[in-house]
Image 1 (tube, rainbow, N blue to C red):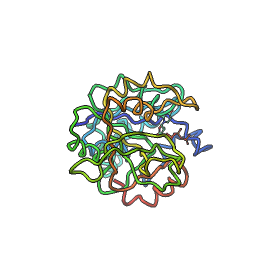
Image 2: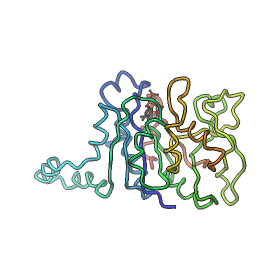
Image 3: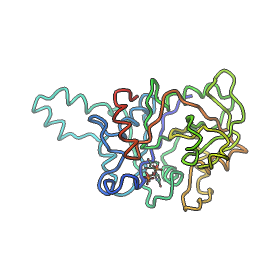
Image 4: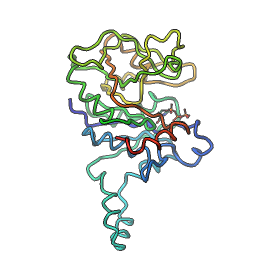
Length: 276
Ligand code: UTP
């Protein structure tokens, strides 16, 4: 399957990084000399996804600015003879970036809905702006490759990882229907539960921030009821569609780091040399 479009929700308040996130988006925290979000965009490019929509909130415009051309800087570097640095500015020449605003932070599903007009293809990738993949192959590449094992034409595919049972109450967790022949890490999903109590969790496979979703899921988001906390979630849109839409889960090779907390960010710095 060819996927060319991705939505990157990066509008969140980043409360776990306050007070620092009052001034700077957590997605721009540096790993080496590049921000976290650049690793996620690179993951898209490696998967052949060149059409990218950032869903931002007011004050987070510096995220899109990072990917923009800067002719003045280019000219100055040229004048100073800094050819190597000039090369480092080039990687995004073939990508197309768009921005959509989320005016109120009403959840990841609500953020994705703000990119509805951007979506032109039948299948779109969703990558959360603070989830990093460490491994030989980026998570979104693994998802796209796994599509060939899925018999249906329209489906959703979610990245999952095996988590300690005591942590299920921090994740969306899947209930497995069956394994898919020919692919030991690909499963058909029977049910999805948001943050289940460890004793009630249907498995220890927790959802991480990489999805392939059909356009129909995005179109269904306005009908999704907000949770108790007022948030509209992508997982609830998938739960509502489970009866009619086949949903699959792929246990990706490698590991995922949630950089949305100071501890997760510290882990990402340690893993810098292994980042995809
Ligand atoms: P998080 O659950 O990490 O939420 O969102 P957050 O608001 O960014 O951080 P905390 O929990 O307050 O510390 C996962 C991804 O979804 C985006 C975030 O920017 C992040 O990349 N998101 C979340 C939105 O774009 N909009 C929302 O309303 C919520």
